[in-house]
Image (cartoon, rainbow, N blue to C red; front, top):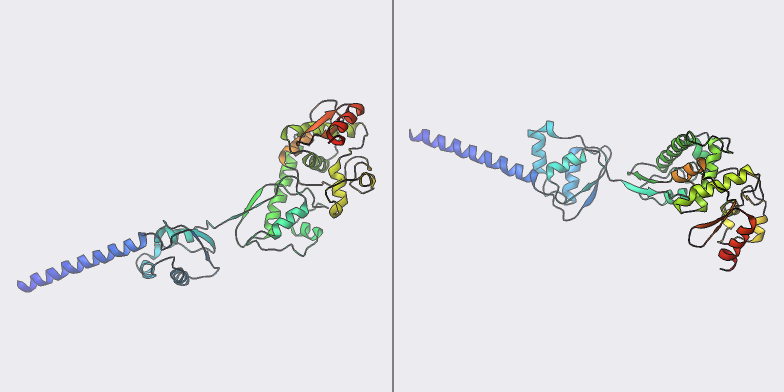
Length: 333
């Protein structure tokens, strides 16, 4: 009888120890990570589970690897497949949440912004400086970039939609350009289908060109349709558009912030003081508002406008009124 009591006591003790060990193991998996602030951890492509555990331990992100090794033995079906990429780890994340997160594919992303009115070269410049973005276009000419994108357009200017795009490590500048290009193609097609019937424009591409002029002429949202109306009426009347941003674009890198009388008379392909009609390509990336203004200009009789110096413009229906506005807002200033 005494031996039976001893055996029973030992069994109870073993069960208690097993239960206690199990609880301790669970506590280790459920406690917060050993970090005091958020860190970015990268799961390398092809990295195995045990290698990642060792790396996490070496970087003091977890206190020990044994709770996770036990998990592999006891609950292998609960383990997610680790997916490569960068992951943000927060101090309040538990060990179990850590494993789930590393298998979620919810990787760290980085923003890159193309403001409205930017040129294609400015896009290339900002992409070249984007951190952790694979650079595949640095040595490519514009035509080669368009070919890599599978685009049939002849000139890249204006064909990329201005917006903020997000990427993760492993993506390339071509990936961002492809997204932006497809957005612009879709947006232009959508807007072109909503155009006024009597526009003096023969194609969606001409609407894109006109929208780029509108974008570069004003940053005041309520003026876009009014400026579009001026350009459309000038086209209808056979008047030259005479818009300074086309002169600046035609000057290229020679532009130093000032336009001279000689610049206005220079016969470039883009100088709308010299050429008739629209320039041959867009001069910038227009946003949706400028695209919509180009196909739905505001009615009126204004044929001229001049910058007032505060970002807005004075609109005139006669040359005499326009010259007075020029003296008031430009010459006197």
